[in-house]
Image 1: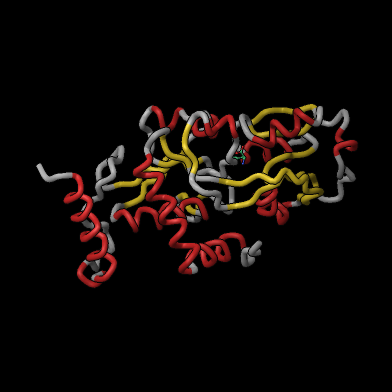
Image 2: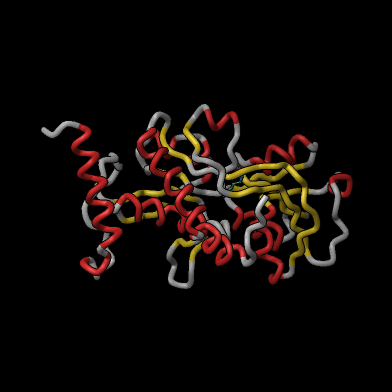
Length: 263
Ligand code: LYS
């Protein structure tokens, strides 16, 4: 058995070899492994809850893609492993169950960092700012909280949007994901949809409009199992790298459609 330091040094060497010698790996497949234990060898398994465009959604071929997945591809690249995305109910993600049952290494699902959730799993540095938003049928006069009195508002189960709606005494109807919220708006089962503002724009071409933004000052983080500091450090190191080398801005611009505003 090699001492831990030697293993880490070997892993670092392997990583730098990959980075400097991409030509020797024309298949593009991850070679080698990392010193970090993963639920499946050689793969960074990521739990996510689509549809939540532009963070996680199916492309034309049915593959789950998006900003959250792009970030994990960067983490996996730095670890020298592949990525696999597992579609998972958001409640299972935000409760910590997905990580605790070993369904995945990372949860990446537009998850707002909250004190409650911090007790259940560990968060990376924040990577995206979020507020709540209101989606209504185009031409609707529903705008403000006061307009929503007596109206039915679709919320996503176990989300900060659900909490916000409850705190504002709205009449909520709970759905498991954003796709089902939109369906309920389409069938007239609800009058409006509340969810994170950044995901509502995807529906404005389908006869809906974003009627309002409610500033909640949220921030998204990636999550790992409580105490998995090796993986958490790796995730944060990748976030640092991609913020410095321009990769984060490129991903953001591609997925969101505008360049990030630096603060
Ligand atoms: N950001 C919100 C939350 O963490 C919504 C996430 C929903 C993801 N599909 O509760």
